[in-house]
Amino acid sequence: MSVPHYDLDVRPILREGGEPFSAIMEAVAALAPGQSLRLLATFKPIPLFQVMGQRGFEPSAREIGNGDWEVVFTPVAAAPAAEPERAGQAATAVGDDTWPEPVVELDNRELEPPEPLVRTLEGVEALQPGQTLAALLPREPVFLFEELEARGHGWRGEFEPEGHYRVVIRRG
Image (cartoon, rainbow, N blue to C red; front, side, top):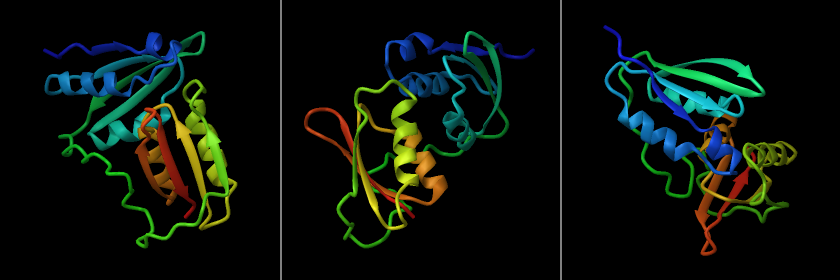
């Protein structure tokens, strides 16, 4: 007998401008062995595919109308141990501590997801190798970290006293 999907609808969170990543990770933690996660979202969550892939899940996505998507994440193998929390500097960051001043400063705090990620990546891609960009974001950009790592860029980031997240990215 197969275990039914664990259903999670993050469309209300996204429509209110929230970030559903923590709700998704809580759902993943609540899955029974062999259980799939059925996620409903307002866009195709491509960055989440890599995150879930690292945890041993394979995505199957389909548009269900009005721009909404259904993605079923099915376990394909024993999930690897969870990654440790990022301490502000990526493993891909250049080893020295001297980074040039940012040539671009972006304030992405008021944008709706996935615009902060898209705008930041576009800004990084416009840089010359070795140049840096600073971005203010409404929350810790977990999906952005995955994309930066995949593209070979380094970053450093931390929460500011005002509650937003500031990340400095050096183009690889």
